[in-house]
Amino acid sequence: MKRIIRLFAVLFIVMNAASVVGANDLLSEGEELRVIPRKNQVYKLVYRAEEQKKVVVKLMDARDQVLYLEHLTVKGTFVKAFDLSNMPTGHYQIELTSGDETLKRDIELYNAQQLYGDYVQVRSLGEEQFTIDMGMSFEDPLDLYIKDAAGEVLYYGTLPNEKQKVYDLKQLLGNKATFLIYLGDDLVKEQQVSI
Image: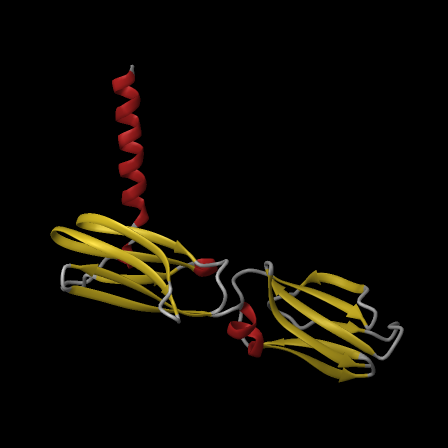
């Protein structure tokens, strides 16, 4: 029974390791290292060594401070995921060293406002009516909050992708409102409007 459990455990690990590398993640001939961006600031490092090598993997910030360090022995393809979703925006570098050889790949982290903020604009239609222009389509829905000058939520809903919706603020008390547009938990756009 223990032997069967061990066999299933080994098969589970091998199957999971095999599924980690997708068709787009395969290294081309002569390529040894690739860093592939994934969803939500997750990056996948794929490294290939034809012969067994001792390697050191480092993740460093813009000041060359080591944030992650791992010593490995690799033969064949090695895959490692780096979840940088909790890291501040900025420049990062993945460095892989084997003997005298060092391979480096740069990563630039941007927040949702930096990536998408210019594509989403709140536009006045006059008569206290507004619409939101989207210069690109989003795979995931965007959430909209409209707040009054006191910070009270006047409206909450999901932005439609295909058609323009008109937001009528005639009933608003005060002369200012703030549109807050989120992609998941990430703020994409904050725009204050005058009524």
